[in-house]
Length: 351
View 1 (cartoon, helix red, strand yellow):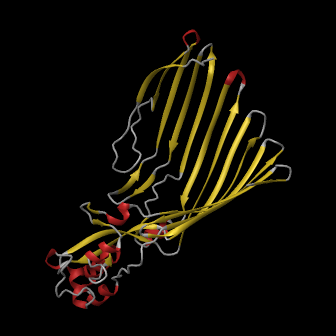
View 2 (tube, rainbow, N blue to C red):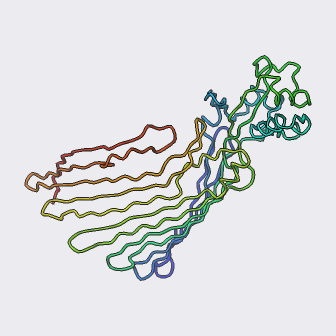
View 3 (cartoon, helix red, strand yellow):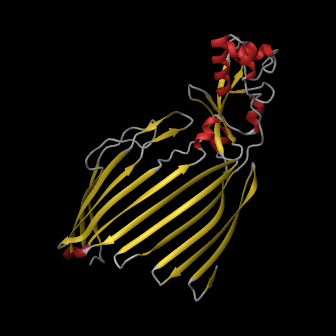
């Protein structure tokens, strides 16, 4: 870290190294700059590399979720299920081939639509992120904090689904079945062999991009009142492209979120309050166990506090989602309602 221009500009850099038993070591460099103008305006910029090691579940899971069998991407499981010797085809292409055969009865055209899966080494997901931001007092009473980021992923980890022919229901003994032959392909398309669909994590080809921004503001009013709020936008730019290729991105982030709040810690002697309204956009939930739309929702939180200075005590009564508007935070989760609470806190330093 180094300060320049009479301490108005701060430059910093760092690097980190991580190593996992099954993956190559990773360096994570970061550089940033912070410029302060007129003692109340701060401009920042940064660039950093990061990574995501495949989890133990990504590597070793074996779980039947009814619609498919989730299998870890470790090479031991690839070998055990003979994915490279008993050719597997993307579920998307198998569905298209079956539709072609059922509609037109053209064996050759249907076979040509099958897309075989190639198994490359499973790698660590990497990300490069650029961010710029500002934080400062626009006026004596208005504090603003804003940022924008742009990220590029390589070796993005996503789930792909594929289908395998398993004669006699045995994945480890295909016998004379040849999934690469015309007869084997016809069996997979036309139901001449038992098939199993799998969910399997792979590294997506090319770059996957995301971006987002956020703005928060806090304004001080007369009489101790404060109002504020923030808004955030997050977008996986490459989401449609990933889905078109048959990947599950599992980004699972609403594009828009905001909250608005008002508070006064002493609007009547020893009595304070705060209220916050939170809202988030509807979004598509994409995961190994299920997919679906998580509806938009908004909640109102509120709290009233009362100080007892003579007893160094604060009484608080409040609630989250006080209007009891039922909502869910992810696909398949139970809906949530209101939570009300009362607390008594003793603080010997209360003033």
